[in-house]
Length: 57
Image 1 (cartoon, helix red, strand yellow):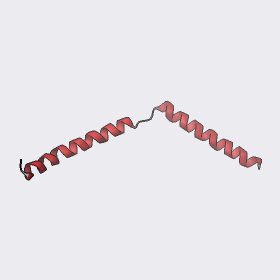
Image 2: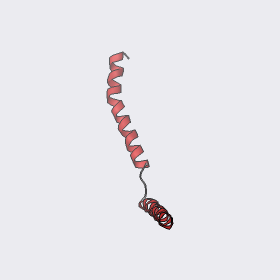
Image 3: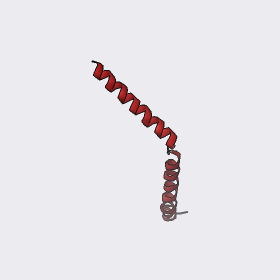
Image 4: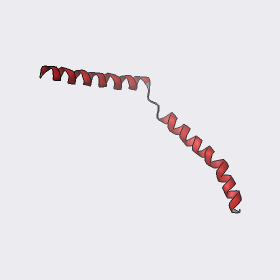
């Protein structure tokens, strides 16, 4: 196998492997709607607690 055929193989297989890895990462990184709602609610409660504490000062 000479260098030109190896380079041709990398040009074809490389983007396919990259696309597969990116697709896998995107699919594994999704957050469920329930989890996202829990996070948003906790953040809102945290802000409200800090605002209440600031008003008491």
